[in-house]
Image (cartoon, rainbow, N blue to C red; front, top):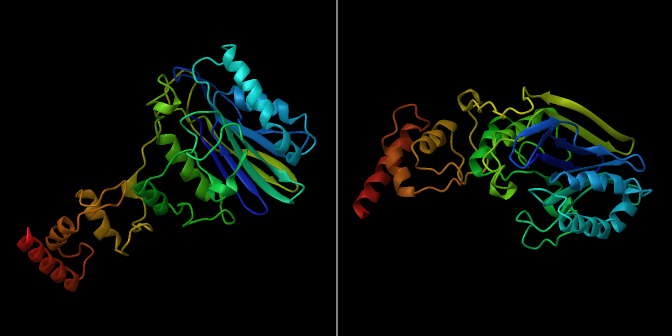
Length: 313
């Protein structure tokens, strides 16, 4: 699936999209801007899934005089035409659509962002299909990939962890957005994207930034990737060793980096969840060499704890 990230603050909304277009087999067939600016009102249409969705909704959006009117009246037409396209067999391969509408609400004098999805595995449990859902329900942000605890830690080490290093009001597209999109680019598609696409890397070409505020819509490229049509996308791996030695923000105890990193590398702390076995952790810390992130007092306490754990085993 394509990368779509929406960060909507009180005076500005930022949309980050990649540029790759691919077929049902996951083969890259072209690169182009995926956030369509609307001439009849201030905002853009973008999305994921079958590109029929954003393409049709872009045309539909131009028939409305304002972003607010579009949100109020467009959903039924999108559902009707999407179901008709599926019935006619016009949507080869993947049939799901996920459409994002980000624009300036004249009625509320602020930027707003909404997402509409067709029936699919991407729907939340309580989410109805073909209904515009405000991103305020998702904390003002939308990211196309779930981030586990370890991945959030690696973003934090780059100064780009959501809700820790930035908020919707302080988001910097270059400082925070590029590491986020680079992470998503390295993630292969899962089975929900379709059997031909699952396991392949499909985020590439370029990273486009779209900014929407009261003055209008601005768009430009802030990162380019050396991808080619017809060739597989091969993202550069993250050089974890070169990242700053910053401890995670999401662990229950404030530990030095060396102490936490040693436990992760030893498999005592699960990288994806930060779950850990206190007994195994105590045994590991009891054998920690000098300078491994523990003070002499901490090492002495860890050894004592390890003896207690062994006695109970």
